[in-house]
Image 1 (tube, rainbow, N blue to C red):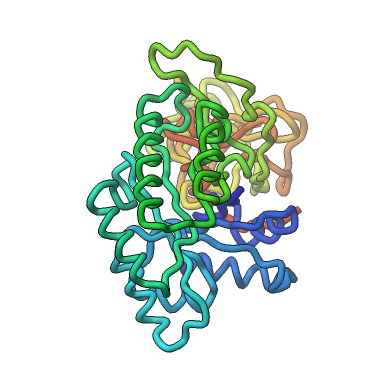
Image 2: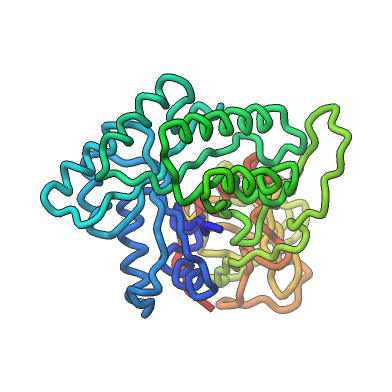
Length: 372
């Protein structure tokens, strides 16, 4: 399994998470780009992970010419999809190569985002690799667009295209060490995802199968939904057994009371219908607390947890400050903890209110982090 720490560890802090994952046995990490890969290498070294224990690091979002030197210096493995990307690496390594440069080739099987398409474009690329022994095709991969859909027609089409790509590959005598596909949803989807067919496909090339877990490492997973007309079982899902890794806390700045008829926040969108006791928190949309969690007198949306009880957000979430209702709570004072994300309120709750997915909520958090 490749442990994905890209996008700063899905908002959790790659420098904190990467050493912990390696200590638990992760042999592969996935990062966004060469700069993030270099930061992860540095974090691993500073955490005392010896060179012999350092994992392979896959740079998942392609690379440009200016990235080649960092890829080589930090021993990062790039995902490639063009001949030009590999030419940049060879040029940067000119005269300094001790062993072939290892790359992972992404096949675009239908997501139309990153990768080389099957057929003639893949033939051209494979022929180029075959003629350049300084490039080692260490891995071949694809990415599924609808992994969270059980019985997905699109996933089935992508699997067929990937299998055709592997047939093309075998025709050029290329034997990668790794074959990988599938994110957290594909793993959660079990037989309907990638696991049932990936191993035998890899075995046919003499390769090892690998999956890429990201979101689930941090305690979240998307709901597995059936394709319309799907009649199979959704299987035993891991999602209910996951626990969020991160707790986001803020401390109460001040507490004050307002009378009925007073308005709260920008544009006075919240009108107090009764006397209320309010707490002010030093957190807002600049920190990643979504503005969609704002509440009016007619619509209750977001909340935080104070002493195990919900404290609803009142008025608009502003840039660095948010007001919550602590009327009826036991004594709440400045410096008390408020849980913004954690027990009683999750990234999935925020995502539902904001009309997005938990990925975006987590990746948008911009506050200091510490390992507990």
